[in-house]
Amino acid sequence: MGTVVVDVMPKPEILDPQGKAVAAALPRLGFTGFTGVRQGRRFELTVDGEVTEEVLEQVREAAATLLSNPVIEDVVRVEAVAEPAAADA
Image 1 (cartoon, rainbow, N blue to C red):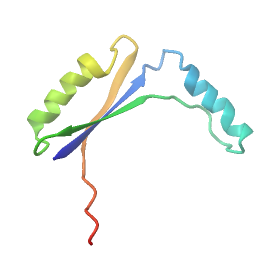
Image 2: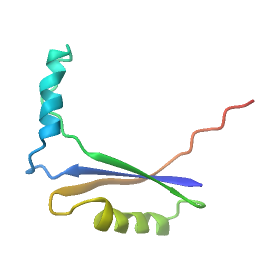
Image 3: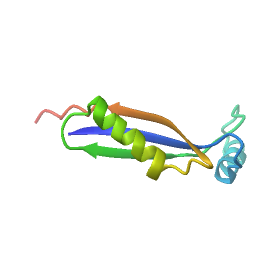
Image 4: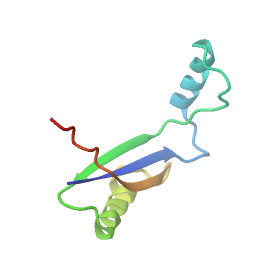
């Protein structure tokens, strides 16, 4: 089985109240030096079999039509990820 990750972010011109809330909380918690935060969404799709270019194209289509709202969001990443190695018993 393979896994494909899709990251979706609000377009830069769209207000991001959750990102603003996190950005305001960081210095109150002692985390300094950050100038902004944008919060997005991450999807992990597991596929039956190997992640091929055809599978990635299907995921790109799904990301553009179902996983994101193209009016206010950009799909910023569609990428196959390596499966973690199984632990030896």
